[in-house]
Image (tube, rainbow, N blue to C red; front, side, top):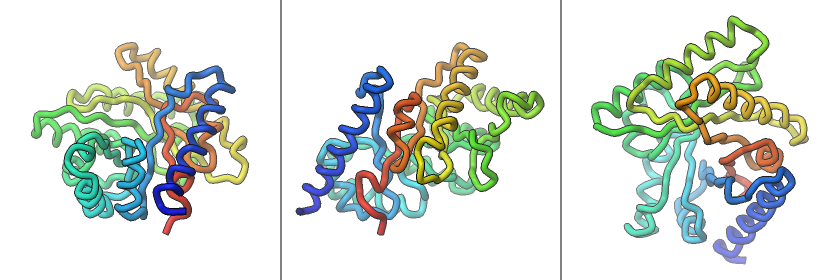
Length: 249
């Protein structure tokens, strides 16, 4: 099986499983966007997947994206390359924010009000408005990045601190906060993380009720090991690497 056939087979299998999960939840499969996370994946495989119809790609690190994004664009040619969107889905250090804005169309890992403020200043200087997702540590794991929400909504003090950070970010005029993102704990049982996805959806609904002008329609949750459960719990965007590209190099 050549590379294109292999990728097509993996992609079609994922699409079928997404559709089945959406229907189990009474949802339209078209509501779920697939972001292909191309961490460590060679440019040739990324370009091949783009030719199969995937238009959204995620990278974890600015350094890797600096070489890969131009290489993929060169392989695709100008017309198709312009139809591809690139998202930063990994942790962004503040000192690399300016370079990230040169490479990525959206930042899906805004995890502090300080980082958000820096991105706002940089985009203001460029005369643009940056689409972002707020990364939320809904599981409360100490090793995870994200706005701390492990105690939401039970700890009133921590909840008010969370709301204060989110309110500060929502007020930034040059950021378009499209929704929330989370990384669930690693587990061999996808059912074990269902409550994490459910709580992120409930948090989004609470935030939209608190700030009616911000619908926050995007819920980016679910990866290769648990995306079907995430879809059942309301994911509108799933981030898949191994499920589409195969084992990482």
